[in-house]
Image 1 (spheres, rainbow, N blue to C red):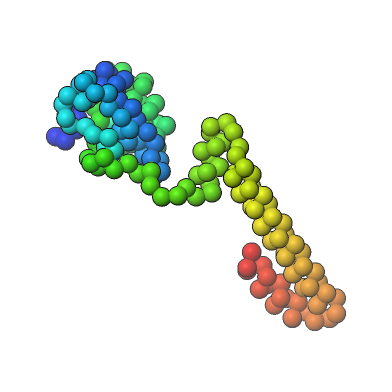
Image 2 (cartoon, rainbow, N blue to C red):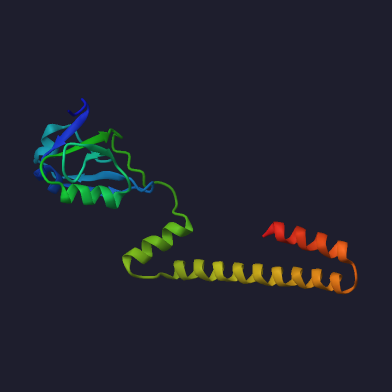
Amino acid sequence: MHKSGDIRFCRAIIILSKFAKGRDGATYIDAITPGFSADKTGKFSVGDKVIATSAVFGTEIWPTAEYGRTMYTIHQRIGPLYMKMQKRFGKLDFSGEMIEKEIIRAERNAGFISNRVREIQLQNYQRKMEQKDRREKDLYEGLQLYKNGKYEEARQNLISKISLT
């Protein structure tokens, strides 16, 4: 029914273990409460990645999707919960600097906007306004060529500008 390598969790282990979302969107063990089942078995360590869980009901085991769905399954499971873990020996996937989208998403989810996010938004706005101005200028140049009877040159100019956007 369940392959070897699958690890059976009881609800007490779930409650006494903390999970976290990695930069890749996957679910990782973030903390294990000392002295309880998850700690005593020695099978789990911080950083282990959840790669499959039982379905919310029934006997099927499904590959994990993103963190939110995995946590939903863990909390809503009816009956024993089976989880297949990938041993990572304490390595969480949180390394490296966050990209702009991750910074904005993290702060939006936290319910506040920092000066760093405002700076990113302002830079994005300025970049888009520059692109808009450039496109208007290019269009105007193409229309001027057309009005001056330089039809082929106008067509080539507009085609080259359109392919750049």
